[in-house]
Length: 390
Ligand code: MG
Image (cartoon, rainbow, N blue to C red; front, top):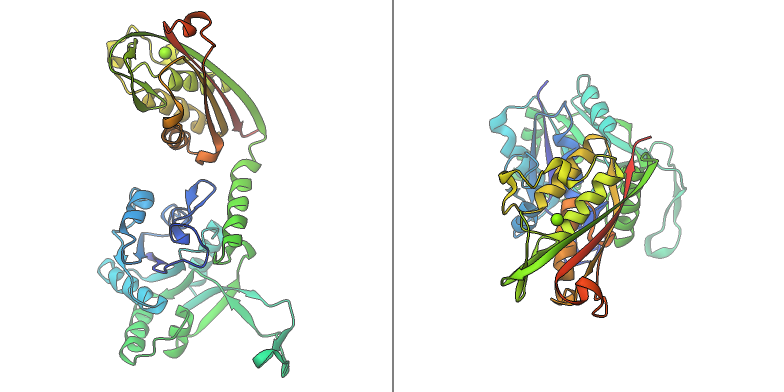
């Protein structure tokens, strides 16, 4: 059975606050939509993933999800229902047997839940995950209780909602043609068309992110999940020195800083990134920067030092490890580092695949003492905390 997925991210997502819509805000260091799309792209049972995004969100989307391997995003409509229909229509050319329709705002959907929905589609035309209602439900128009509702047969619907492709495409077209536009999930579209839809157990963490609190909870959940199993905690330290020679700029943490000197070295002489590379290699016992990139090799002449950090990160991730945080100190009389710290943090955070809040960059002079004080050169220290599987 060829299964496709539609991920709807068309909403304005403003209830969660923040400068960008909630689906583009970060949890565990990555945008919400990145986690959601990744769950489907990585699932072996899902052949293609069709994102549906809001008008004007293209820049946000390209910045965070452009490289994930989804189909090019389509622009949604004015309601969730319309966005879902547009997503399903866009899949017609791919001729799937079934489609899973999922909210981008449910990034914690598990691989197992996706598998269970796909498995159930072998027996049912429609299947959705849902949660039983555990609390007593009151009907209270205007705040005064009128009646108590029997909750025993009631469920709250989640996504991904799975359907055989042809029937749900037809049902969506019929609902649109009949101007039945107030249906809040795809199961309601199916219901309207008489397609039987069954229920399987949903997951509590698969709830929809709506408020700033939901975002904070999801952030905590993802961070704990990422770090929780990595119980082998290691510290790494790196140090590097480069001499000043006449020039017009230095490069530190990948950022170009105008100066009356440059740093001498074989690569771009980014002492901060060299110290960082050594810190990572040190934490995992993989030698040092010179082991992997001998300065005698002309290959590294003028190289951007980000590649050294990437190599160290490749060795770390190959072992299933992650960086918890990085702390970099730069010792120099000049240039002034502080105005560039924000940009440097962003660069390092991206290289280490962690939020910028887990990167510290500090600068200090040596009160004119020593070679740093005489402005003969610059010194950088880096410390990282690394977490590895046991
Ligand atoms: Mg160096």
